[in-house]
Length: 183
Image 1 (spheres, one colour):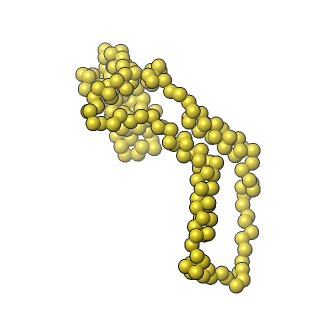
Image 2 (image 1 turned 60 degrees about the vertical axis):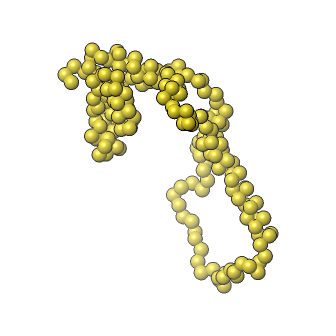
Image 3 (image 1 turned 30 degrees about the horizontal axis):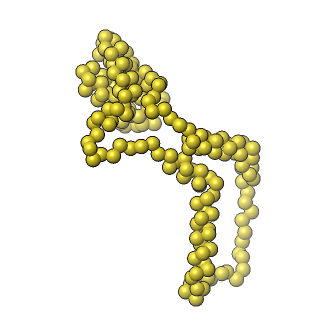
């Protein structure tokens, strides 16, 4: 393409290929820059400025409108394209809930209660005897260059991590996006 502009920069190869397929399906001449680098060494993509999607200058405005239209009406397009038996995925908050459960130790608490319960109901005669050493041969001094605890930096990081997870859990998202995609 002699006179072309970069319409969009994508971070991953699948994202760039989907965007290029959308544009070519709508009749635009779209090409990818750095796609070969992404296929061979994906670590280089961010150093090269992402995978660029190029279109001719004459088609740039229409292609931009096409991408914005596709992004803003994605839910309606998905409902129209779905077959009657297909499940349309709903927004799930299981990731935030599971991270909070792990952070606050609720999974470990339930697991430890389960082990205590098993210890109470299983007779000790059923378990093999434990071979404990007669003496301790050595001990670990624990030399390290790291400070002994997480320090204030680690606590602030964990505090903001919990705030982020709680926000993700309780935030309400609009049904339609009011932001333009990266162009």
